[in-house]
Length: 127
Image (cartoon, rainbow, N blue to C red; front, side, top):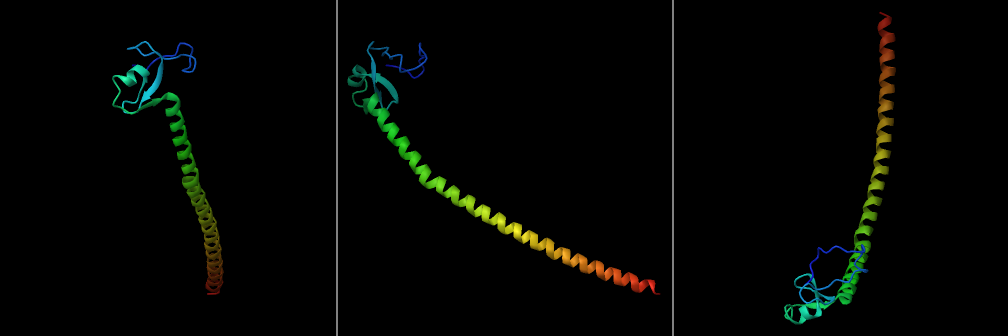
C-alpha cells in the first residue's frame, strides 16, 4: 500500500510510477473510503469491501467536481459581488451628492451669519 508522503526522484508524480510497498506492483487505484492510493491486489484483498476506482477515473470525477464548483462560484458569488459593488458605488455617489449639498447649505448659512455679524458690527459702531 502506498502512502501520501513519497518523494519523487525526478520531481514529478508523472515521471515516477509509485509502487505498492506491500505487493511490489504498480499503484493504479485509489480507495475512496481510506483516501489512499493502492494497487489492484490491495483493492481485491485488503480493500475489497471499500469503494475504490482506477486513478484515472477518480481524477476525472474530481476534475468534473472542481469544474462544477468553479462554475457555481462564477454564477453565484461573482454575480453577487458585482451587484454588491454596483450598489456600493451608487451609495458612494449618492453620499457624495448629499455631502456636497450639506457643504453648500452650510456655506450659505455661514455667509448669512457673516453678513448679519457685519451689520451688527456697523450698528454697534454708530453708538
